[in-house]
Image (cartoon, rainbow, N blue to C red):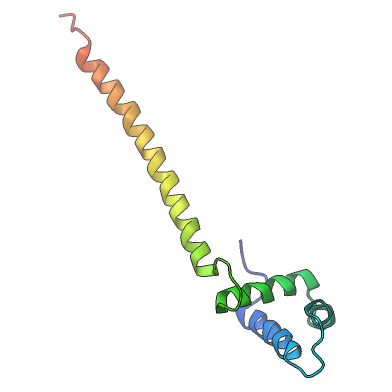
Length: 106
């Protein structure tokens, strides 16, 4: 899936939310995201997800980091490929075993 927004834009948007949350008046995350998202031309949910992901990636919240998710996705794909190859090999070995057991008619 192609990225719609450049990483620099995402980082700036997340930094804006974090800076606003660290302010003196301590507004809620919902209020800050709802205020900043329209100014950047993105949906509030998109900005909320970016901010939540940044908290997990930085270790400020528990969860699976983006790097770990990518590794898990890669390993699942590799596992599926290996299972498929195993099935092909099992079928081929059964075929050739049947060929060896079959009497020849010469």
